[in-house]
Each structure stands twice: as C-alpha cells, then as structure tokens.
Length: 203
Image 1 (cartoon, rainbow, N blue to C red):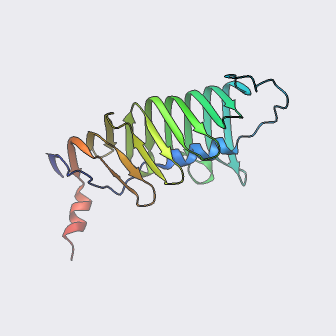
Image 2 (cartoon, rainbow, N blue to C red):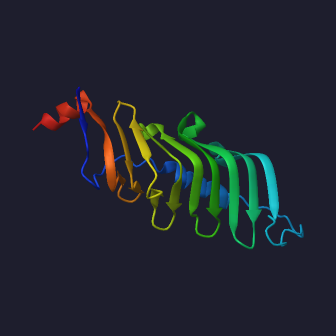
Image 3 (cartoon, rainbow, N blue to C red):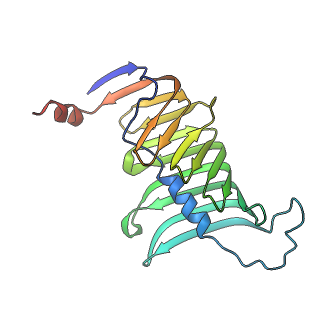
C-alpha cells in the first residue's frame, strides 16, 4: 500500500459520488402528501401543516427502501416548500436487509415542485456501498441538473474507508458523470489499495 500526501489539481474527479442520499431524500419528500383541508395555514408566514417526531418508511414490493426521521416537519403549500429540523435518513440494500447509505443534517429546505434540497447546520452523508463520507456545514442538491454543491467558502471533508481523505472548498459533485471535485484550496492524503495497484500493472 502506497501512502502519500498530495494536493490534487483543481477540478480533479473521482468515480465515487456520494450522492445517493440526496436522491433518496427527494424521493421521500415528494412522495409525502397530506390531506389537511381548511387548516388556516394560508395565513402569512404560518405553515399549512406541522408534524413532530416524524418517522417515514418507504416500502416497495413489501421491501423497505428507506427511512426518514425528523424532529419537526413544516409544510408551506403556497410557497411549495417543506422545512425539516434535526433529521436523519437511511437507504436500505436489497430486500431491506442492511443499510447501505445514511446521513443527517440539522435543518433542510425542500422545494416540492423542483425536488431541490438545501441541507444546513452540519451535514454528514455516508454511502457504504461507495466507501465514502462527506462532512460540511451545508449542501445543496439540484434535482434537474443532478448536482450536489457546498457553499463557495465552506470547507468540505471527504473520507474513504481506506484512509484517503481530502479537505477543500468549492465542492461540486455530478451524479450523471459519477464524479466530484474541489475548485480551490485542496489538501489531503490519498491511499492506493494494493489490489488497485496490482490491477494497474497488469497488461
């Protein structure tokens, strides 16, 4: 195993995207619908519905697909947004046998029509199937573009199970190209596994 410190070139890409959780959250919240009728939520600044200590499990073909938990969920129908506080989410593997991705954030703003999500107040995403984790203060998912990005000045920490870790600013990830990159101020340690090294030497 080779271990060395490096500063990757600006825009360096990796095949591990760590974006599955944002897909998952957009599916969760767009799937939630409520019949709240005349609740008076049309008053300016007031949510149409507020739920506390929420747990939502999505099931398909009798298999649990994912679980969302939140301390508080507020939905504003006219503004077409949902606000979540202190939430966590898990994505299950085949047949609901194990969790293969999970994450948490202190708060989030979900745009119901676009599927865009802004997570804030400390965000942690772990994708076990990709052996990667992301930690930062805020992340924004753009559903149409299929991109994930942090604040322009926010530090983002990326970790892999083999000990590789990077910290930088200007974090961007693209689900279509399965890549992620920093635009500036990157530093970290890259560790190449022995099996990857051996595969690279084969002819």
